Length: 514
Image (cartoon, rainbow, N blue to C red; front, side, top):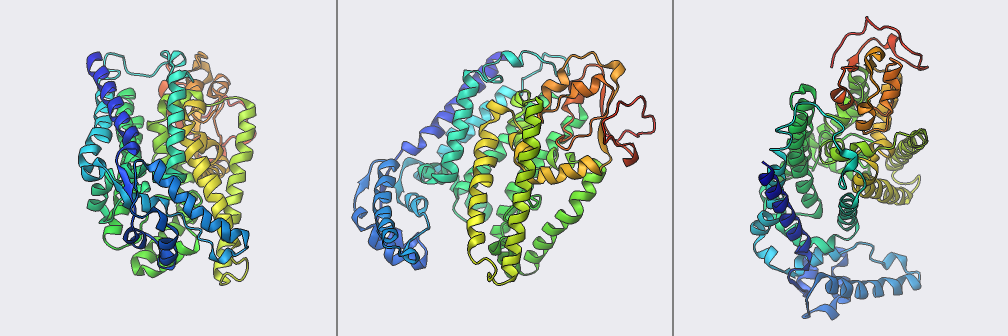
């Protein structure tokens, strides 16, 4: 089995290496026809004029191509800005579509081959490594050396992994022109699903989904024998694959709006943006259904399901961010900061993001129904700020890139506005809690070690005290790793909730529903 796992690691590294070197393959050549075909109607003539010096030249790399593009494009805009001719400035960034159209490379000519050699080998290698994992170990999870691993405890392997993830997210969000070969690689798959060429977001969705599937297999192996963890893992794999990846693409193929039915405001922060509302309203009955569905999720599904099941119904069973955290991020869950100081920062930051999302949405709706007479284009600037600071930098770069540094739930703990909304309901009006039997606790610390949300579970367990915390996502791993069965995920009467954190002697009336 060790031989198979080593071979799996080798295949994964080969696939990752090929994926990484793709941006350096091929050359770039631009002409007027490509410019006219890949720019907006209002910019076609001017863009064709601006980029005239690039016509007919062959660029040996995307770095030289993008550098030349920026020199010409920025020179035009800078001259207008210097003269305060803001209405004539071209604010759209055409570097990605023009680089994608101009590239001539073996990846563009043989996309399926390179997809197999990169993503395919990485997936195969991951499965070969994960399937035999834990085979010779007894069922159950222990602190088996996780704090002595260079990958899992901020060692050199973890640092390299984190740096790679951060670099990938930075390029994906702000410099996609450098990964046009990777986008071309998945274009045939995009054509099959949606009938459209791939974008960087389709590339990301493909990698994201496959990562959850491969690391979901690892979760099945690691938590074998635990029905709750098996079902929870299967759930996040299903919702990501079907609802977040396949269904939205198929909707586009059927000429319907792209829509993730499991995404909920305020996590789906652009749900009430003017262009989204116009898209829903212009899509007929299907679009109206999507709009009503999204609103019903916010005002009915969230409070109702959270009342009965706590925030776990979404954060640990449905959410794509949670799905990635629970699968890909699972090896890093022990890195979450359990200190009181971290908890104080967490409460302030996550609820500040929620307030910002609510204020932004309120202003957006008011401005929309006033015909943009209230604030004009100010809301667009607010949208740009939120999208950059929260939607991209926080949720993407920090939220995932910091797995090896701060644990797998950085975004969920400190940034997700929906987690904050769910947490408020869970904290004050929910039947969900984690009950403890202090008399059985041996203070081994497994529960606190494996808590991804930074909760010192052992502190509660030692005192026999119920755990009612807004941040708890109900993943149940603390219960799974407890060698004495001290912890149980339960639903009970709201009259039995702990609000002032007293020590409980008995709770026989609470019914188990885990």
